[in-house]
Amino acid sequence: MKFATLASCFERLEATSSRNDMTTLLARLLAGASSDEIGTVCYFTLGDMGPGFSAAIPGIGDRTAAAAIALAAGVEPAAVEAAVRELGDYGDVAASLAVG
Image (cartoon, rainbow, N blue to C red; front, side, top):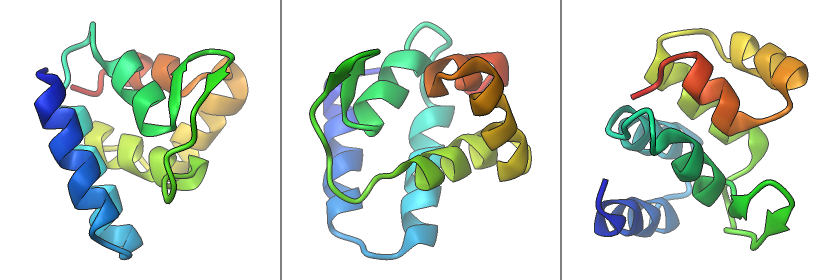
């Protein structure tokens, strides 16, 4: 995935206040990521460079990220939230659900 694709999605996210629109935009972004990219895309979306490094991106929280992963993977958000509790990492959850 080109960084410009990620940046363009973030610009569209900043332009909307609708959680449903945010979820749809994020789901499309995640669906377009390869299995090698999905973890990094999840971290960037949550405002992190990786585990333990934080640089907040306003408006994207854990619930929105979980909803986007769920939509991209075709599962219920509760399944994503349960997997996050088990695995502890959104990137690992997205990869385990074969998002992208």
